[in-house]
Amino acid sequence: MPRLRSIPGAGLAVGAFVLTVLLGAGVGTASALWQQSATATMAVTASGTWPAHSFSGFTCTNDNPRQTATLSAVGAAAPTALSYAALQSNGTYGPSYTESVSLGTTSTVALTITSQIVVANRTTTPLTIRVTATYADQSQTTASATVSLEQGNNSNKVTCLSTTF
Image (cartoon, rainbow, N blue to C red; front, side):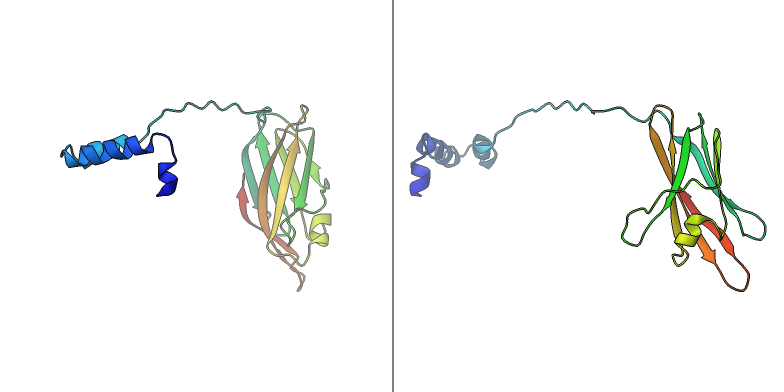
């Protein structure tokens, strides 16, 4: 206990603690001498601006033979650009594509077995595709769709599995 003795006021604190316990004031009062309490206030300010645009809906639908999957992104304003990219096996997204894109408050992407993104990722099934809309103020919003690819036997199907936004 030589370390405790070298702290200024430690002897007085230990003495007060022992005296409180010996006089029967109780453990609660004795331990209160050792506790400290404080109130802290913290203010948080977010830097930057929140995106002004977002999708209010995002769907993936198929035609009857499931040879075309149409991704539809619905928003309050039409984007100035819409691109899409495939999730790679290393967890990053590959190159962006703009093929078969239609812009508007409901923007669409049509995917077939011959679409550039499908051809480049033919062996990846299911295939996760991230759609990114860019607006006039340069803000962006994204959504994802997962599709399965069925090739061979002349089926050439691109089937919608799920969407997230």
